[in-house]
Image (cartoon, rainbow, N blue to C red; front, side, top):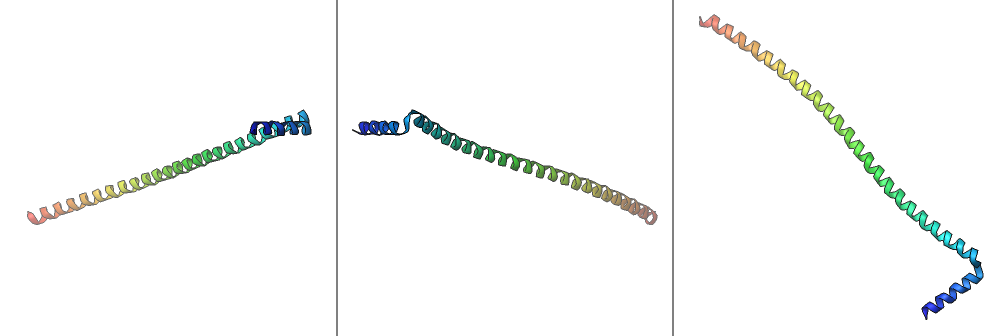
Length: 103
């Protein structure tokens, strides 16, 4: 019964619109679906671009972190060298003073 009523409606629409009207309707529906598909793909593309931009930002942050660490390591190395020189000088002075008073 439902099939019969659907066919009856289809026949009525065909008679009203004609063959070109139905073709236009089918084309219009296909364009709507294509537009929806394009919007979905655009949204996916935007999310991929966003993930890429976040990855680039994290990479740049890591580069900055490494450069800062290198600078800190250089400063620490200089501090250790100065500390070693001071202790060497102090040890030499103590040894000389010890020899002066100890002899």
